[in-house]
Image (tube, rainbow, N blue to C red; front, side, top):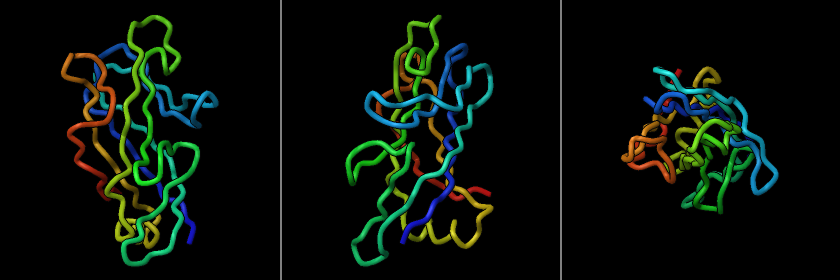
Length: 147
């Protein structure tokens, strides 16, 4: 089976005047898309990923596509921050990893049955140091069905 599903990352309350963007591609061959400079609102990044695999006992979905990063069993999506997103007038150079863990066949089946649905993850935009959140999102509340 192969299908595509829609995802949305909501970056909540990021620090102001920092550029954020979704990383498309990996290694040295990537571009930052959906660039947004933070102000006082949450930032939204909407994209799709491919799902491969056969539903079966102990068989997890396999994620792929231009936004998917990481090894099998540890896939994630990058949000580029500051200079990584192309901003030149900042000292921030960070990336935020949003894990794809918790996306199950049950959730995928719901999305296939109703194309108006998507999976949404809300992640904090500000880290403990007051700057942009970076590294792997913690705590991560997971992916929720959203209309």
